[in-house]
Image (cartoon, rainbow, N blue to C red; front, side):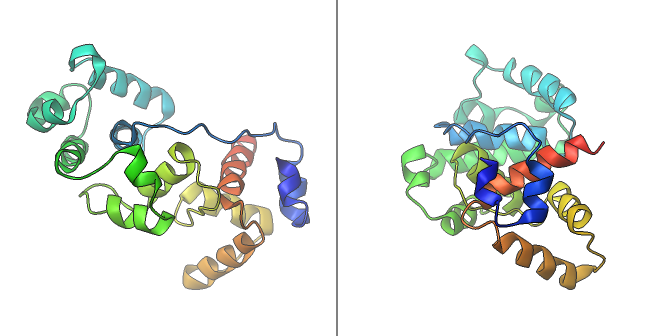
Length: 198
């Protein structure tokens, strides 16, 4: 897929040696994807895996149905390693799913912007979380998560940017325009590339 970015020589030269990335597979259970995203936020993959497994084990057949999760006390959710905030956030998702349409068919019919607006009604689900759902679960091709710290760090390092604040945001957005209409794949390559720099 690197061939998609040959018109940006800086970017292409950085990612050309990397293992090619395949397009993500569509995930039909967006409710569970949101819950999982909250659990995984700001944790290493290994720690998040342990906590998420413990979380699933709280439920019959290891599935947190909307009703059961909504009714489960925060104190019980905290026993598996969830913070107080995350315990409340996953309960918020369950409550939202009970009264709003989170079906794949409904969500996937919306535009990227409408999906972000729909999902960020849930307290605890921010724009970044919604964008991760767009990129990894709905396989939307042109999402650029400018507020993702790793994406920002990768662009700053690759292009030797020195500005800060709004000027830096504008520089990053200008560079990212070169990757349209494949900015989701570009973001995934930025994460991939940054991992190789450690």
